[in-house]
Structure formats: structure tokens, C-alpha cells
Length: 219
Image (cartoon, rainbow, N blue to C red):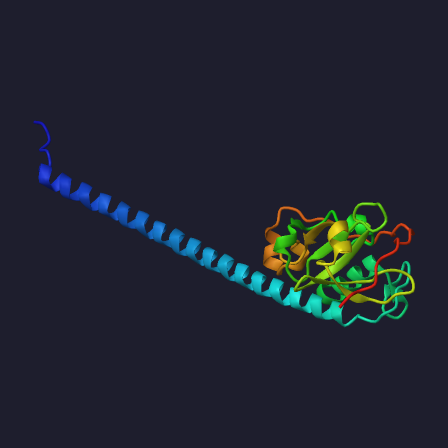
């Protein structure tokens, strides 16, 4: 005698129950994954907002620190306010004090880091470069807004504010670079860790070549 088959309706009910259970497990797993992703997205969004706030604060502090150095005497090869500052020494000192990052020592090396910025898109804290001795990127200053930048001109002068609108600076403008908000070293730790790679910032000797004549600042 053949065994009695179970009623089709019973098999269907059990199959439906099993499918429902599997669906519930899948939904739970999907929900957990979604919640985890949402939490990760929220952390990233917060990190980005914090990074933007940090970048803005750093830019303001950079300009303030640069302006505080007005009147410091120029010294060829100088790296501190006490001994005097040259143009790249001024930039290196300000960034070290504000961000803790040691930038390259020469203007040429400084011109290779960060991101390129158009003259019309300058923001406070950007580096502006000029050809003052028939050599590209031979002079550098820190942009402070309103077409002004702080720089250490040459021997016999002091750290001062100049305006890019002056014909001399317009003629010799070489370009600009943005470091704040671009370099991982100047962003919060979470952003830095997310970067695949970061440039090295080593103290290198600046070629001892004095800048050519630079015009006096004008009101």
C-alpha cells in the first residue's frame, strides 16, 4: 500500500510559513545593514562639516597670524620673528604656528603642494606666488582678503601688506595655491585617515638667492 500523501493545502501552508520566516530574516538583515550605512553616512557628514569648520577657522587664524608679523624685519634666510623673516620663512613660520604643519622651505617647493587656485577665486590663507627675479615662483605671500597679501619683501624692508591690484604684482603674478581644506595634514584626523596618500612635508634648505628689487608698498 502506498503511503498517504499529505494534503496539498498543508504543504502549501508550511512552505508559505518557511518563506515568510526567510523573508523576515532577510528584512531584518537588510534593515540592520541600512541602519549601519545610515550611521556611517551620518558620521561622514559630521566629519565633513567639522572639516569645513576647521578649515575656515584655520584660514582666519592664518591671516591673523600673518598680519601680526607686520613690521618684522626682513632677513635673507630668516625663519623666526626674532631673527627676521624672508618670504618663504614667513609662510613656513605662520603655518607651523597655526596648523602645526611644517611646510617646505623654498618657494619652488611650496608652489608644488596644495591645489591650484585662480586669481578670481582667492580665499584668505591661500599662498600667492610671483616672479620677482626672472624665475618662476621666486616670491610668495599669504593672501588675507580684499586683494591684499602679507609678505616679506627684501633686505632693508619689513613684513608688509601689499595689494595684487598694483601693476607690479599683476605683471609678476605666477599663480596661487590652496593648502587649508585641501591637504590631509590640515584636516581633522578622520578626513586624514580617509585619504589614500598624503604628501610629505620635510624641512628643506632654501636656495640662498636674494630676491630682486620689489617695489615699496602703496596705500
